[in-house]
Image (cartoon, rainbow, N blue to C red; front, side):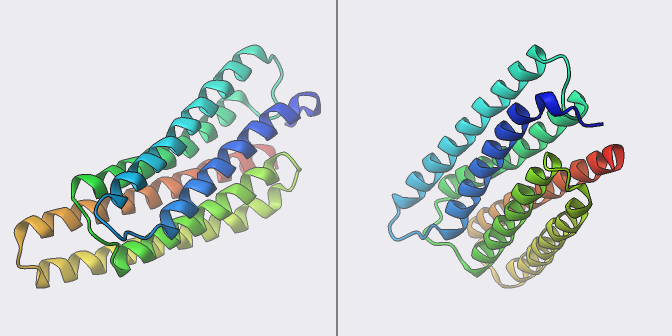
Length: 206
């Protein structure tokens, strides 16, 4: 159950982690390629968000090691921390794949999948804040919305692959876009993993 005396430090750090995640996802979904070198700027910027996320993970581990009583089980805090970090890691991987695959523009599929991912991170940020304000009953609704965003990405991914293999004649271009689509789908899957961890926390503490 919740231990009020040690709540704030963990709540603040997890909040900062989700803000960083949300800012990364917003940048990811709003960025527009206008010239070839833009994709390098995009990749480097996402890498900066990921590096900042790694620093938050380190701070969380230090705080967990230094704190005897935690607001919820320390294993749950660490699990949630790691799952949030997984999303950022996957985002960095996807951004790097854009650079490696020499994308010259973001097509409709990429734009739509990125928007769904951004929506999922919105829900993650709100749900995580609810943990430490004792609004656990509200978390499930946000988890369902995360799953809806993931399902939308899954649909876009399947449809994009179908179209790609039916219409693309250039094998190199096919491999490039297949790689990009797979990496975007992976981000959405990691968002769903966050929702599963949130649901587990609700079950343990409701």
